[in-house]
Amino acid sequence: MIKTFKFTILTLITFALFASPAISDEFTKKDLERWQAEFMTAVKQGEKLFHSSLGRNTVSCDMCHPNATNTHPETYPKFQKQLGKVVGLREMINWCIINPLEGDALKMDDPRMIALEAYITYERRGVKLDPGKH
Amino acid sequence: MKKGISRRNFLKATGIIGAAAASPLSLVEFSWGKGSEENFTVAHISDSHLTFINGNEFVRNFDKGLKRAVTEVNFMRPKPDFVIFGGDLAQLGKREEIDHGLEIMSKLRYPIRWVIGEHDYYLDLGKYWEEKVSKLHYSFDHKGVHFIVLNSILTYDDWMFNKWKSPEERMSQMARLDNPQGSPFMVKDKQIAWMKEDLSKVSKDTPVVVLSHSPLYKIFKPWNFWTEDAEKVQAVLKPFKKVTVLHGHVHQILYNQIGNITFQAMMSTAWPWPYPVSYAQAKNAVPKLTVFMNRAAPHSERDATGWSMININNGRVINDFRLWENTNRTLKYDEKLGYPVDEKYQNPENRIPPQEHY
Image 1 (cartoon, rainbow over the protein chains, first blue to last red):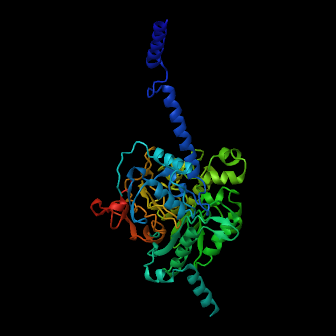
Image 2 (image 1 turned 30 degrees about the vertical axis):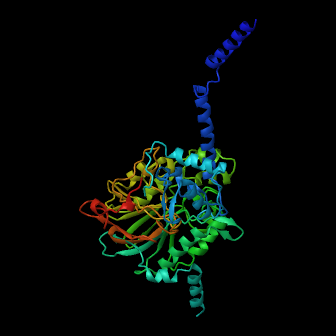
Image 3 (image 1 turned 180 degrees about the vertical axis):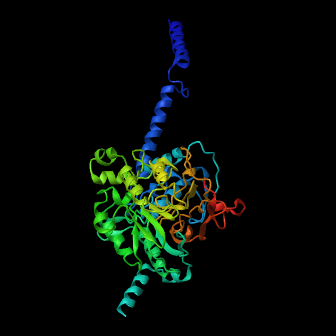
């Protein structure tokens, strides 16, 4: 009786190990689609923010950077003269919000900051990384 | 005395008396004129994009640009015969913005020839502009040169009249440069017919200068560096020996030669735009002839903005760009080569690193 029980448990464990759909990192096409959709949602939010007033003077990012051009996300981190040090893209985004847009800096993990970064980098997709370039 | 005080106050208010006195002044010299030796000089100011915030508040940065240009033109030597304004005085076509622009421009000591831009037009389709500023298209003669001013920022009727819920929505849609819902600029048949009729009275060896807001050729459709019916306009200009188009809109140094027509873009006083070559996701037709302006330093507020002195000699334009916070540039039509040439940088060996855009 006990033997049978042990056997059943073992069988169940074996089954759970090898046949479970919860294998940790084998993702499906459906997963990929969902993740891409999540990313594109961030891109769309970023596009909206990029074309809206983030400061106090109605000026928006796209006025100087149509399609996020001349933002050069592929060149960060790099030395930024006006900040006097090597910075990441998000710090430069904040410089623009504070100066030409006359607004307040966003937190580095603010979902709006992430969305802006998503849009800026998406518009530059395909360009090779070139950190430090001016 | 009273006049002196008010001028001093104006200079003080703009805060650039020292800068203006220290900087050389730029002008555009038209050198041509049918059988006439008479050369003359005009100034060209464009794309000030004055932006209303609230109450009596406007975007400080853009106000500063236009005020600086106005002050410098007043100091210009030789004195300009007149000043051309190349369009986009306002940002969203608001009466506050146009009024504010007229107030700043009223400090100019010279007559003004106005060109309308899309930012002045799409709120009320040019109604307030026609009332307060200027006709939308017209022509005039000056010292042997025939000038044609076009309203080149029209578009398809359906987009203009049926697509948007309100004039404000239409204006804000047209104001977005990279708008996938945008619509290409057009001169349209009615105006082209007027132009043809107007030019029928002009001899073919009279130099013609066309003033428009959009470039009258096709560079990059996604940003409306583009006029949809440009070929039709070019065809009307084709029989003339010397034709120059001076346009705004692109906020950058950009020049080209197509057949007999020389095209030159004017700087904005407000902010610079990237070259379409900087957008990795779409093809462009940026003219190979153009030596790019320096990439702008974002922390230098007036970098890559400015205005132009235009000298007209024997019917050709010598364009002296006055580039604030940057080395000035001069573009001159080369009779031998048959196209405009940058005096210093046209030779690739003389180019400098900031002229590389990517």
